[in-house]
Image (cartoon, rainbow, N blue to C red):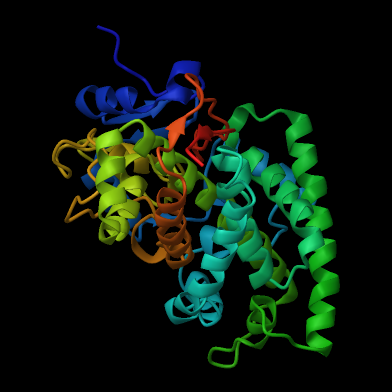
Length: 404
């Protein structure tokens, strides 16, 4: 009997990975992937256990596989996140220091204060397409919204937003694993360098003349007398840019598609906007924008009778965990009022996504506005095209029609 293996590069798996996730959970929940040179974990309990286990490191540079070698080569050439550590790729005490400094400028209270302005941005974007009777959810709403918000937070002028998005797209394209084409890597390297040059000049301006933006707040942040070095500040800005728009774009796009494919749930949410918060959590669980995250074993560790050796990578399949029937009743059903929805779409443990409050607020504002203003919202295509990588899941386009 052939044991099922995880291969995210098969077109039908890229289009819909969930049937394979189910088979993996049932037949091969902890298995070694020769393709990825990593252990692939698909059960909720295993994923959560690894993400909260201090013996697994977020510093991928300590791993022994092609992903790490490729990333190291890119960084030697001035790669995407420069040579500095980020919250995403460090462990305590370094992670504690970096997150503590950045979180001072990225609080839930600060994000909540942005709600009226985010509502204005959503309304302006929908105003632009209201009379057409059609729109592309991605290009007209899901893409520009988070770009505008994070660019404003970082003090980027409106005329630079498209450049910001290009930089972000180029960096995110390198998450495809060991099969990333050399030209994609080179494009990411150039964009990272351009971004670093841009931020260096802005940092100098903010040092001389602080403003009411996130970059000025990061420069001012202090914790026990420590500040972010310039390289750490650059790496943090680049991380916030890439993580702050691609994932929210995919949350909104994937969520709208899920509603359109489940019209009973769409009507339920339209009729009762008070379900918005639970609906956004359900979109995150049902078809999350981040499919997987990796950890490196710092010693030999046993998982369900299998030993993950020191230096090996454990790929925690977040999206598979979020469809685990052992954790979520009827997991393949979209259920906008679902309760006790302890999904792992934002990760788990000390690396839980710092930007989760912002992503949630943007989605909580976008969905009610869209359903309220676009009556009889419906798909304008029989075939949707998925972009992204096996790490980030999102649509290239999502054309819809509605009554005017």
